[in-house]
Image 1 (cartoon, rainbow, N blue to C red):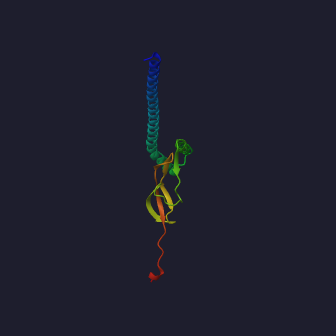
Image 2: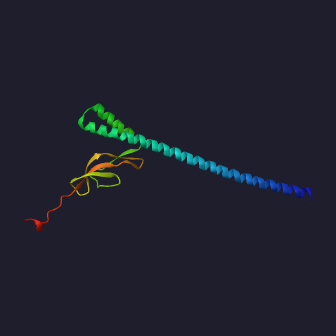
Image 3: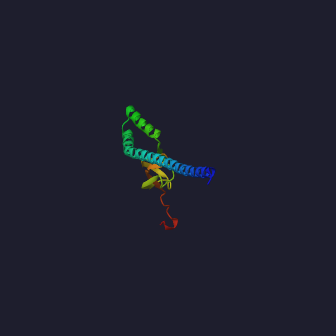
Length: 156
């Protein structure tokens, strides 16, 4: 066998080995990038979950502030309550406006049916909140129901 043929075979073998290593490198790099992305996603979910837990713990405080504000008229207290609501809004918490709207079982829980406009929210007893587009807590509401009309044929 000629030296040139040997060199060509050796070169081809080296090229094949380089291609194998390159393929392994590309796969390893893709695996690493996927792992990095999954790790970032998990951290993001963990942060969001932690934020939701803290916010859920704060909602009873908001409820208490709201109840106190109805009975105590103090500028300092009003300022503190407003500041609390501003901080929640900055974090992505939104109050669900329900009074006067049609009852929606996805964002509201009916705790009482009262006389009023049919299927309209008459009163909000506990505020509902959303966090980054997800319902954090449904609103507890009183829903209107029209009084049944008397049937003229049954009147004596």
